[in-house]
Amino acid sequence: MEYLGFIFGLFGILAYCELSSLKKRVAALEEELAGVNGTSSFEERKNLLDAIESYIGKQVTLDLKEDYEDLDIVMYGNSKNGTNTILDADDDWILVRIDSAKGSKEKLIRVGAVQRIGL
Image (cartoon, rainbow, N blue to C red; front, side, top):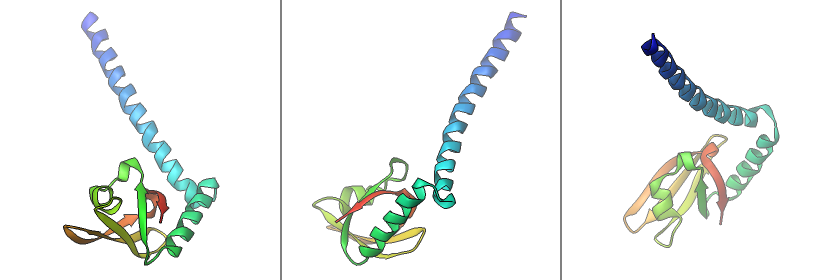
């Protein structure tokens, strides 16, 4: 009988761990949907889109959210070793050219992945 209690306790701990990770994922989805539904996050996204459109053709510094970091942008585009140039943008995607000593690459980046953009 003790083993049965131990097994149910173990399953309870596993269910709790799964539930806590699920809560984080739901919170991230709610934040993303807030941009669509017109809350304050929507205003931040609108300001970011306006900034991106004004920076088309210019060299910029991109700071990406932690979950979306791209090594090419972090290592080459935002340093003395290279530059990021925005080639095109729409409501969901940004086309960026990364010029470095190793060459040139073009990458698509989700607008939702950008935390900050600057010259």
